[in-house]
Amino acid sequence: MKKVSVLLSVMLVLVLATISLSLPMTAVTQDNPTATPQPTITSVPPVAQPEGSIKVTFWYGLGGLLGNVVQETVNQYNLSQSTYYIEAIFQSSYDDTINKINAGLASGDLPNVVQIFEAGTQRMIDTGSIIPVQELLERDGLTAVIDDLEPAVRANYTVGGTLYSMPFNSSTAMLYINRAAFRDAGLDPDKTIWTYDEIIAAAEALTVRDSAGNVTRYGLAVYPESWFFEQIHAVHNSLFGVPNNGRGAERMQEYTFNGEIGVNYFNFLKSMIDNGSAIYYGPGGGSAAGAAYANGEVAMTFSSIASLRTLIASAERAGQGVEVGTIMMPRQPDATGRTIVGGASLWITNTGTEEQQAGAWDFMKWSVLPETQAVWAANTGYYPVVLASYENQAMSDALVNFPQFQVAIDSIRAGEVTDANSAHISGVFVSMRQDVITAMDDFFTGKAATAQEALDRAVESANEKLTEYNLTVGS
Image (cartoon, rainbow, N blue to C red):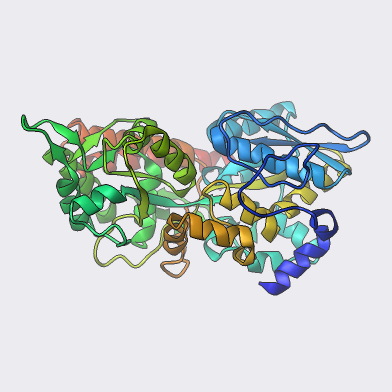
């Protein structure tokens, strides 16, 4: 780690030497170019472009508080040097970003660098319009950067032995708990690994009913979300598709998520909905579940570690005494895997001038400096993508101030990295997720009699689209 930190610092240490990495933070401005990003709901304006600098376009899909930290991070880079100017352009969402990339292939309207979520990896590779970052790292003698990437993160963006994109914001799935409610129910809020049966019992213990039998607080909020379903397969070291989750030289040919692992997870959630200890919010219910959690109306909810700062702020505003805690994804007793990496990475396109490509690459190298990643993680909830960041004071302070981080880090390090516990790679990843959401909703609302029936239909639909996609791109 020391070697990588020194190597990266040689690139940009002169322009970053004055950057303050202490907490608390103040906003980056022209008058205060060395301050660190601050999470804020108020929109963050870009700094002015220096005269004569080379403009580099950057599309990103994070909004809200997290999007503001993206703009603050870009501002920090722009104020650290004057050769390049990163123009950050928000694209509404991750889905909209990848869709706009696909539309831009025909029109030529492509950015120089783009933030793409993990579901878009195969589609980005198949565009034929990107430059694998491993080629640039090898060209510049910077392969030590690869060695310093968090192993789970490195695996997530490596396909067929090639690191295609630069990890930027990495997350994983958690079960958020109200620590105060846990204590009141006689449950241990410091226990981080819970089995399905233990969560079922906890949900019942956490459910509060009034004298008339009406529920005033549910144990768990449930909403259909494929990402959590994918995480469960990784935790149990079960392939989501074959061969090898699409991570080898051969692209994925078939989804296989309708096996025992998927059925058990569906039944686990349905049992709590049926016994009244879980409330079901339906498709798109993540925001409602998060609000109910922050308001103390539910004691547990699934979300990303990237939601940490937002949920803490929401709970504080609600003033209902919710103490935000995190535990690992629930599992069967024999689970030996780890959770997978979510979030997004930065891709460099082969469009624009040589100078713009150089600027995009300069920004990407800067984005994985230990200092940059430490401040980014401390102000968002994402964990650092480079190991050297943990030596930085900003990250040390963050782990003290937000111990929930450690559960996420432990989750992605809970087992050896394998293809089965790394995110699968597929050209129909995005549409497959809708098939899973439909399956969950059908089963939870009684439209499908069994979990197996719902999952079989989802796999059939996903595989039809996967076969068509692979034929189109020439698998």
